[in-house]
Length: 137
Image (cartoon, rainbow, N blue to C red; front, side, top):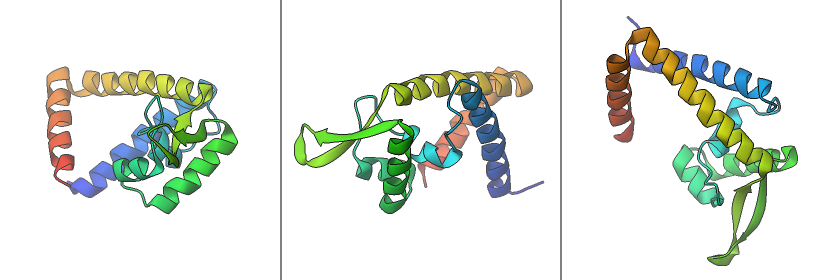
């Protein structure tokens, strides 16, 4: 039996391949898994880069590069933070919001497939335990 690290990496790989193939089919073919470090954590009304870095566990410089890419692709804009004009918010555009809606729908469908594969109760228990373990990190 493989260790948890190998199993987690394999699950992530399978999950990302399915998610990004389906996002591409839904019109978001320019997005790559690396963009998830921003798109999976951004708030509908925007988030600061430092928040995205903290939530995703990625270095602030990496997040800055990803924000630049996503801005060029039309998924986010930088706007002054109304709470602190010196700071910038990264705000999803209409394309960004559509991607967020599509991703939530696709993820729910992927998870429903996992639940059908192993049974709803087992999948719910797996997800709860997986969340508990990752919260400790």
